[in-house]
Image (tube, rainbow, N blue to C red; front, side):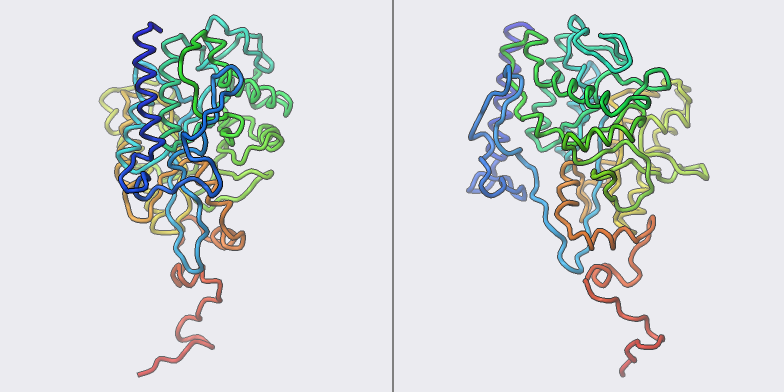
Length: 421
């Protein structure tokens, strides 16, 4: 990166840090209205900067704009959570990472960005990556150049400062039976995760960009979950993830019901939602909509682009309202920063963000925030929520359903109170 570019990027990040660490202040205390402060006893954001390793990352205090999870009170209706997540998040010439950061801010949302470690590894250093069951330097998604690394780092920094989560999509994205992640052992997954962390924690050394600003977090503590390539290898990945202290996984497929723990991790799988024009349901991921519309052809019939995008948007919205008006189960959505079929899926996702994230009782959050909220709840309350089927609202209303007291008997049955004039 040229010196002038480096100065410009550094100034931008410094300005963003200053604004974020001040909480984008609007009140006398310097805290953004409605945004919780740091946890009791935790360092204020920006009050410390402790370099880690070669300076690629740094501990800078509590993450700004990370809400404090609160337990539901008896009889309280749960909020409607929606998680938008991005596999292999990186910034390239399409500028989709930066675009959706802005969409998030404009619509009171935070998201999860699953960073691929090899996006911070220059192709000249590719042999530093030792993928399980593959030759050193192999990767099905390639590596990056200096500009791509710089651009991705800038977006990751700003995203975290705005309260978004930086998860992992691991490294080489190997799928299928020939050495794909579905064939990896627990130890091979542990190696893959360690390398994903290492590339994030040593990009300065690997890229030579030693004057660039560090990522403002300790990745060993920040990284608490991910999604496996092609949703394969979940069983052994979860065993490895549990050993490494992860808190959730989003590699599965589920119905729109309240999540539970699986092998000690929150199972925050993507879900099946209505697929307009079809009798079967569809997974809440752009790639799966594409495959069921144009097959593996990423640029199909242009005359169908708008229709296909509308199909995805309407399917996600049907799933949202089914939960919002029903059991209030969190809606989990997965995406890629791609322009498949003319970018129609990016439009669909943006339309959904704009329609749902500003509604009453809706919280568009990261997986980190959702896991925090789930951990804060009474286990009996969560167990009660899990008795609700897809789209099922409590018959006696939320106040009765979650009051902690037996629901009143319906009128006209033994034990029901008699009507009084």
